[in-house]
Length: 179
Image (cartoon, rainbow, N blue to C red; front, side):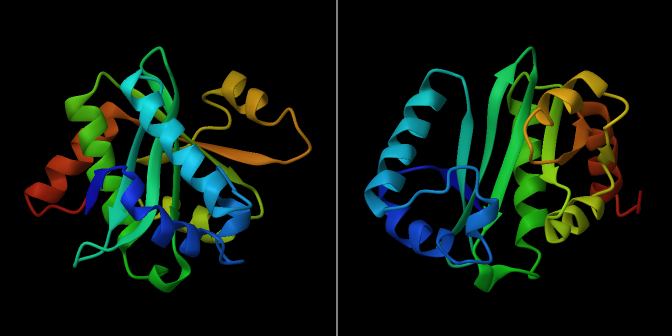
């Protein structure tokens, strides 16, 4: 479902990213394939330097369908960014990708809190993240972070995932208990 980023999938991902249903919500909205290639190379370098973690989301047969990243890694926290191509909306890929990535981050990396900033008008993303039992609205709990992401004209809601909440939720899923 997830793999480390490489340049071979850039063409397929760029074509999915430019869809008008996806493009406005992408962290790195590239205007050309060459720019997308450059950004992907930079993300690979940034991961080697420990400032981000980036993965390609794959469908069941191994085709790239989107990306998921942890960026601004600092003091055991980071921000999550995810996008999935429009043909794959509503098929459960978002939730499965997030769960796999969060498991990697919380079990294999030294991460304690993951933030998600979602534009207030991005109803699709807000609905998707609010379905996840371990994600909590964090506008008040992390008020300083909330203020920092809302310095521009664009408005965001801040959500958070704590390691302990995710692991507790994962135990319930593994044991067949709804949490």
